[in-house]
Structure formats: structure tokens, C-alpha cells
Length: 267
Image (cartoon, rainbow, N blue to C red; front, side, top):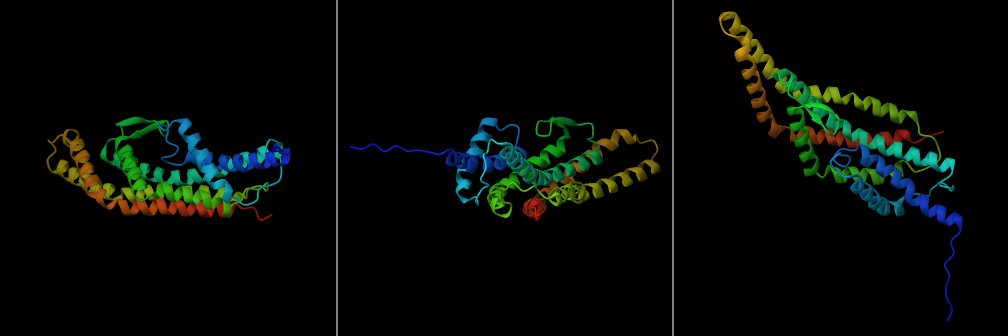
């Protein structure tokens, strides 16, 4: 009875390592920066296991990889490049959530809740209570429309539109990402316009009331009224926020596709 010995060359071994390691780097970059996946409450072990699981699924569909040692200098540069691509993709979707948080910040400042801030473990900074509440609402909408699955589908698609190669990335993709960052302020102001308008009318009414009756204590009645009106407006607008949130997430997903196409070097 003859025994069969399986032999592997160093070239074949390097090809197998690169086929798993390079896609894993892009996937881990997206998981680290994307909302929901990159949340600090998710253990790092879970993120790594999820990245490896996704890499094993996506790796067979990845186009031909560069024939080089993944542990060489050129291979490590490709590894770093793929991680940066994943970070850019995750950050593009994170901008959509930042716009929702900006809505809460603008609303809280108009309501007079600028002093009611809490430590946000997600951004490692301070955010207001309405901002955190709206971020939770946006997360529920994100999950309810399966936007997390669409994000993973876009990640798998990115290996076709932006193949893994040794060519440098085009800077126009990062320029597009920087321009997309301005959407934080425009979308945040647009989403908070009902709160701003209602509180502007409230402040005008309080000013007229104080002028007509100077004996009234504006600070005594002003804060409860503006805070109450702000919460009422937020409660009234909540049923109508689903559609703009969905549009914002869809826009973020399209920006990821656009950034991937622009990063493809034509040189």
C-alpha cells in the first residue's frame, strides 16, 4: 500500500496566505470604522472572528491577486493599502450617522440642553442626550432596512470594482470622501429644521410676552417651555424620520461605490 505525500511549494503557500490575508485586511478596516460593526461595545475577538468568516466567504470570488510574497515589503504595502480602503468605506457610512448626531446636537443647543452632555463611548467624546437618542433611532432604522447587509454586499462588490493590486490608490477617491464629509453639516441642519423653526417661533413668542409683561421671569419660564416644545417637536417628527434616514444610508452606500471607483488608479 502506497502512501500519498502532499507537498507544497513556497509559492503556493504564499498564494494561499495572500488570498486570505489581503481581503481580510480590507474587511477588518471596514469593521473597525463602520457603524454597528465597529461599535466599542462589540468585543475585539468577535470583530476578528467576523472578519475571518467574511474573508473565507469572499476570498474565492476575489480576482487574481499579485504574485508576490505577502510578508515582503511590497506585500505589506498592499496589506496597509487594503486596510486604508476598508477604513475609507466604513468611514463613509459613519458620516451618515454623524449627520444624525449633528441633528441632535443642533436641536439640543436650540432647546437649551447644551449643558446636558454625556460621555459617548462610540466617539470617546461628549454628546447630548437628544443626539444619543437619535443615534439609537438611526441604528434601529439601519437594522430594520437591512442596511448592514447591503454594506457587506457593497464590501464584497468592492473587490471587483477595486481589485487588490500593487498599484497606488488614486487620490481623487480620498478627495471624494472629504467632500462627502461636508454632508454631516448640511444633512444635520436639514434634519433639525423642524426643531429650529419651532423653537424660533417659541423664542419670539417669549420675547413678545416678556416685552408685554416685564414682571415675568424669562429665565424661570423660558427654559421649561423651550425644552418642552423641543421634546414635543422631536416626538412629532419621529414617525417621519424613517424616510430621510433611509435616504441618508442609501446615499452613504452610493458614496462608498463612488469612492471605490475613484480610488482605482488609471496610471
